[in-house]
Image (cartoon, rainbow, N blue to C red; front, side, top):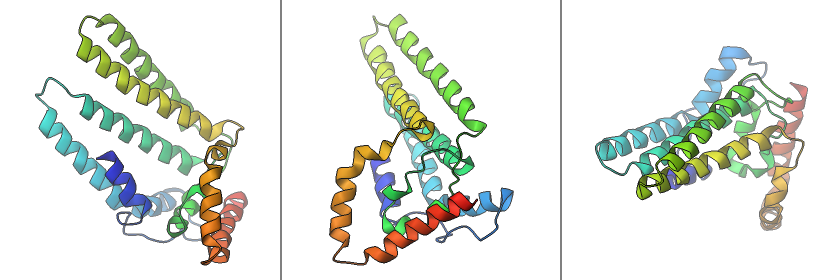
Length: 206
């Protein structure tokens, strides 16, 4: 189900009522409202799916699916807020051409005040889940589920660190970028590349 939401957003099927970049000079609350408008329908769809999963599995003995969805959702919200507030690595070159405009809501800076809170809270939860799984090692299914969800949480924590560490995380995806750029040469790469470069200059200017 999470994959469906990712696909619907990246293809531009479900995004938000605002399908353009931030207004020039937008700051503070105005900029935040505009950013929310760019992804509102997508976030509401995720919230509705989460509620549906919770309703189906609430009294079930196995709620690994609900925990997995919750971890993915919370950590994705955290990542979006951190990118909005400002991080070192924005990776806007990974955005598909039709979703270049959300880059105008990103901000580039070494760190923001939310990041330490996000990392600390998620690390504490991950450590608790691993410890809980170890303590419940006799309950095989429960312990396995806890470890699986904790593993996803740890991967999300690593993803958060890649936002601020002086590393080029996008290097992992250069093979895909080369294929996309090659495929674009027969279409309209100047407009796409210019759009991304314009967003990058705007970010540096801000």
